[in-house]
Amino acid sequence: MSFFTAPRSFLSSVRLHVQFSVGRMINVILGILLFLSFAFTTANSFFLERSSSVYTEQLRLVEDISRLRSLFVSCNDYFAAYIKTGNRTNLALYNETVLLASQNISAIQQGLRNDENIYLLRSIEKAFEIYFYECCNASFQYTMRNFDYYHRLYYAEKIQLYLQDYCDELQGDILAVANTHIENIVQIRSYLKIINAVFVALLLLVFIFFARYVSANITRPLEKLVTQANEVAKGNFSVSVPVYNEKNSVGVLTGAFNRMAGALGGMVERLKTSVETEKQLLREQRKNLEYKELLNRATFLALQAQTNPHFLFNTLNTIGRTISLGKPDTALQMLDCLASLLRYSLSDADAPVSLEEEVDSAREYLTIQKYRFGDRLTTKIDIRDGTQRSVRIPRFTLQPLVENAVIHGLAPREAGGKLVISAKKRRSGAVIRIFDNGGGIQKAKLAELNTESQGIVSQRIGVQNTRKRLAFFAEKKRNGLMPFSIISKEGSWTMVIIRLAGEKDV
Image (cartoon, rainbow, N blue to C red; front, side, top):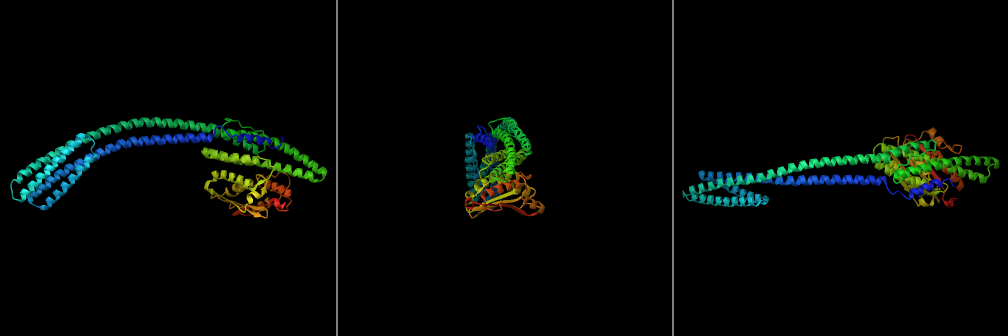
């Protein structure tokens, strides 16, 4: 059995996908809650607005009728003043008031809905026409010095009193209707209070169920997964996380983690034995080329195996912190990105990949970090001259370097910073640069990083691990290039440079 048979098997099970997704369930529950809240709020507003609008219309009619009554009184006062003094200013005011009263009658008529009130308003309108007619006759006779205008004026004043009585009667009817609507509004509000209380209680129950569901299916399983990932990072591969639900995303990830931990444990043990055997053969065969190639391949696989748990530990820590901050949706999106990275990293590690695949893997990792750092992290990927498919690179090379730039370069800065991945064509190969404007590297540390350490496995998993894998890869190419270097300005920036040969350069 090959070293990666077990990881491939559990990735095959992941590709079958799950029948039930925790993220989909959460989205459905949130959608139902939002829909119910919107529908309930809309219904409340509709009923209250409908009742309030009718009541407001009745109050406006009462106000218009009161204004009409005042206009009738003003008409009589202005006309009486004109008859008494002969001042034509009072006559002009009388005519203006008559026009306003007629307009007010038309406005009131548009708002009435009850037939009895409409008939009463028409009576007011006819009586006002008679009142105006009598006032006109009285004015004419007054001008002609005919003393019969006294009788016309007296008759007009009596009609004006009737008009006031009619207005009072109409106003009383409208107020009675308004009081009925007030009682309806009070009753509707009492019903709505009861319905609101029931709805809030239901929402509370749904929220409690939702919180318990998220805790049981996401939070607690992921906390246990993070704890066991810490153990894997320490080199303890005999760990196992209980699977609560094999059909949801967290259950699939937990099962994949258990299989990966077991596979990595057996693989590391076999690799240690293999490396020791290869060392003995090298001593016996005095650097025989065939055995040296076997040793390089075994070392390459050992370094690749070491990278996976280290990355998984860091990523699960990030997801755990996201959950502790109360962001389960973001954690689920990060889990999707992690699943994609696991599928990529646990494929055939011995086979090089295209630069395009490696850049896509780094992009998935940066997506996870963007959820963590938000606006503090700005990224740019600039790949030119069609180098993405023409250049080959060891699998999982860019991600540890990008992780190192984010964690050690940009994360300590409160303002964050920018990370740029660029690649330019060099004959049939490429020069790849990973730049960050973080805190830079101290000179002593930079010298250590640029020095090729001895031994098969470096204590620094990220940078030195990648350096060694690139060195073995470049040796296979036999191109004489220095494949890896770091330049930095302390407190300002850091740039990692990778030089790769294309197939034509071999």
